[in-house]
Length: 610
Image (cartoon, rainbow, N blue to C red; front, side, top):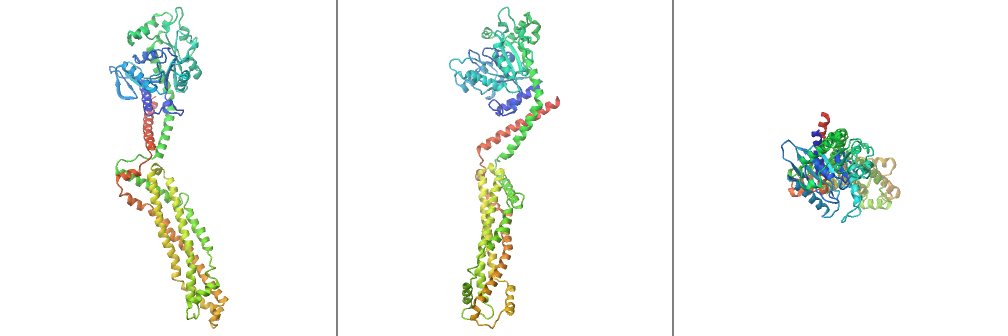
């Protein structure tokens, strides 16, 4: 039992240290899933005295009005027999208190630090752990006492504020309600019973404690309540007799107070038959045993929440990326690894694993052929221009059979227009490759982690593509230029045969410049140009793929890698200068994941040993 409750205490402390508790959150957390006992009662109902009796120490602030103004999460840890008793606050983790009067003062001071020296309240809890061989393993939350009237110095809303705070704890299904009611008041007016009945109507989570039994009017007793006749709860009521104010003023210790409490129940005829389940010692043991039973029943649900949360934390940490290495070599390795991931994503677009690469083929299969078909040769092959070019090429000596120089000049002036579609194809593919860079950047989560590196990688990739485009444009235009630098001889060897079939080589030179002759020259030139266009339609894509697509796949970031190796550590650090909020979140998630994994291992061990 002690090991199980100690384990839960340990997990609760770790949750609190990491802020993984649900006091101010509606989201389910590990803290919310762990059973805890909330102490609820009206002002002056004896809550503080009950807690001090359970602990066996005088450590809580006392006074009139609202004394408890912040929730106190009290964790009791049973230590080895003979060990020294001490207390620790979560906000003072390395300070041990052996003087419990100093503990009381620190609770007051810490309350004032949060609320000021007024009578304001705060929902921010104080966390206190007490280690003693005289306590049982237990976690209790002491809540501000419910009140009906605001006192001087408090806002009118304080009544509702306290009730809302109490509700926020005890409405949780894993909260055990320790309802404190004074026996010298009518139970029907008990604030603790009223609110617990509302939030736990079946009484499954409520444990009733009756205080101030020794202060009841003469001739009256609390037997009917303690026997469950006046108000029945699922679990038996426990009566306690706390120290009186006179006892506190005289510094009567807890051992003497507990002895006198036992004597009271065993010597009072009305309560003698109930004495074995009355008193502070019985209450502490009963609470510890009940808490252990509840914890055991909640283990499957706790395991489920832990496993689900671990998966979610691992996913989130994976999305945020790894933490930055401290040394230059580690930083360079990190950058190179991220760049390789980007490079891989980029290649997958071109290889068809991801979308986008098909647009390059669309340029070759649709845009380039359409652009070649749209070329207009009317100006180059008009009757007037053909006659002008041919006569100029003949010079003072007209051609004998065919105007060879005229053909060459006409073909050259016509083929030059193909440079436009060739350049446009290069630019279209370049634009697609740049768009794929942006896609690959967005699809590389690691680059989102480091905005500076993302910009540098993007710029380096675009600069590399620009160099490839320039080289591709030069190579592609050379293909076009090659066509009019050296004409295909076989095509023109057909010309004399055509003349023999349909022409008359003996006609006068001047007749050769008639429309029919010039039209024949234009048709021949157009036929040759179409043949060249058909050839370039296939060779231009090959040039573009070789110079741009292939190189983008092979060496997109090669220049960047070379420059990266020359950078100093300061510059590498600048590239990995992630958003501080991301860094802080990763650190918090990593600590939380460590907590949940530790809890998973320990709770699994407990579950298997059941």
